[in-house]
Image (cartoon, rainbow, N blue to C red):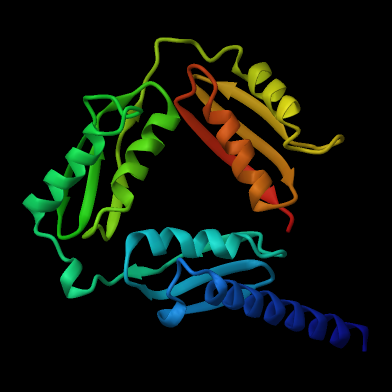
Length: 227
């Protein structure tokens, strides 16, 4: 009897989260949810179907993460561009490189190339936020279906002290509550984050703080979102 009740509770919770995600997608004015279907297994959410632009691809995942109870999001959406938004490879490549050149945060040696709506970013930067800025610069261009960010992060600075620096930053920003089990480790320029956070907002802020560390070339995300 108790087992049947537990099963019913799990089914109800699964349905409630799925319905909440679907409602959030419908509510978000930046997402056309017509072609999106939502699957959920105890907080593990998958988005399937199509959207008409790359910004909507990103925004749909962000909308799903806002829903209480969502612990992970698998974005399987495909971007199906309207015919009027298609750009040939040369035109999209030029537009992407112009966008990179106009962004003061992106170093000059970062370059873009395009093939059938897929944009590849290459080059070398010193910080993770510069790599993110490059992706953001081209994400909203008409004709983009997908972005492959192959920009490398390299710094002559050692990351030996980054563990303390990042942990101090988390405390200064009050990103995690007292008694949190979030831990920061660093080795050879890679910062590893472990422990539990209560929401995706907390998760993303902790990740952003880690990327700000001098000498950080990679962030390994082993955080668990409890929902």
